[in-house]
Length: 444
Image (cartoon, helix red, strand yellow):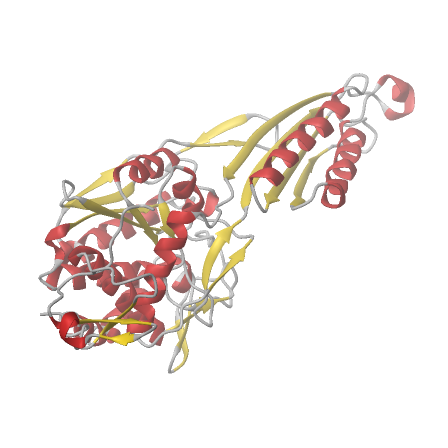
């Protein structure tokens, strides 16, 4: 039986504490401390996780050796078959969920649709009083024709390969944490839902609706994006959006009828200049023009130009300001004689603040870290992930519970191998303590 010691500014009453099996307010200065081995009920499961290190390294190596670029539907489907088999030990109801197609603008300024590979969804004890969402993506930024395809171990603790940190290491952490929960004998009070999507690296356009539904069905969100190399979690996240402006002018022969033409490229140049100026004029905003297209023969006034740009905002106020500013820039270009502008896209990930429920969840993670001898800190970032979407739908979410690693989205991407079991134990302990009620969750 748990024995709880209550201390106050005047001292402590150990005998009274021994009669307690739950929290009891003594006074406002109450401090809780266990005088028994409070981790004993969890330790066998945590020890089992330690024994899974080599298996986890093998899983990540095998998974990272399979190309799962966002556009590689065949590769993603092959990976899904392996993933479903690897997740069989956790049980639950498993199925594939079709995603809506991805819509994009081609080099001719025409809207196109592209099929996406289906997501994997697994659920267990969906009628439990407390339900946790666990999610991560299987797609990577490395396409089937990308030169970075192989996995190699750099040293005893470092694995290099496509997606080893972002996010196939996170997949392994999530899998083993769930296995640990299920074998602990403590899982009955906790329901969970897993979603592994295939389009996160392109903004989750097809799985957005699924993520929003998951947010409504669950009380707590855990996402297994990589943590920083030093173990620092990501706290608040900024927001991000992608836009494509299709600018059309009027063609003309440069030598004979130059004055009759209306250059789409000239109009795009004006737009780019105005967009870039927003970096100075809009607080908390970033605008980056990442790709431009257009033009043709040099003796023809160009009648088509395409400008693709990304916007970032630190918070909701900056998001609103940048939305208004972009519209104002576009409207200004539309005033040019003979020029039209079509603006496509928008915000894919709203800003994710550290609100009250999210702060409580982070505190719970930090408490579990202390039990494991880990100092869990967090800091804000401008990067985005599916955690932004879950938070925007009302789900308190910690979204960097994956392993330690770095240099993601590059050929130098690496994973620190000792963090696989470290982070699996952190998430498993959190799940077990939520299941037993040792960590209460009221969403407050």
